[in-house]
Amino acid sequence: MADIILLNDAVSTIPIVYKDAVGVVVAKPATDVASAVTTGPHAASLGVVMVALPSGQAAATLTPMVAESDAANGGGAIGLTITDTANLPMEQSYTFSISPDLSPAAIDLDTAAMTTVPQAVPTAPGP
Image 1 (cartoon, rainbow, N blue to C red):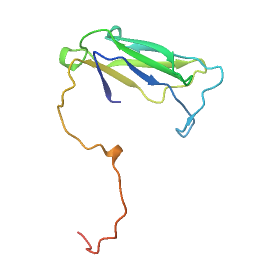
Image 2 (cartoon, rainbow, N blue to C red; image 1 turned 30 degrees about the vertical axis):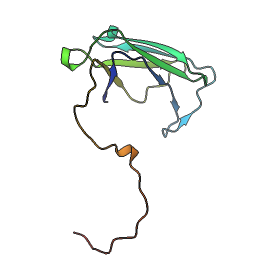
Image 3 (cartoon, helix red, strand yellow; image 1 turned 180 degrees about the vertical axis):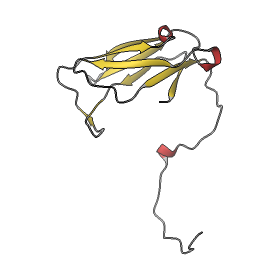
């Protein structure tokens, strides 16, 4: 479970999806209603409300209620629990921190966005 960093000057909306037993996104049960609540010692630092997207899909809208709640000031790790009337379990747990500054602090590869193109098989045997 990675801690998701939220900017303190932005409201974030995360769509709710339903998955079958192998993890494929499927349609929600017809009469199902989802709800959300923040958890943990710093739960009041993050507001959450369920909304309907223009497509009709449910989403959790997260609103920072404080300027900072992260490891730098002893806060953060605010849990978010989604429940629904069908009593489906959450596939994964999520925590959030609220940060006033997301200036670059590290560099990494975006392997999820990696692209490939075909090439001839190299002739060198390699080690």
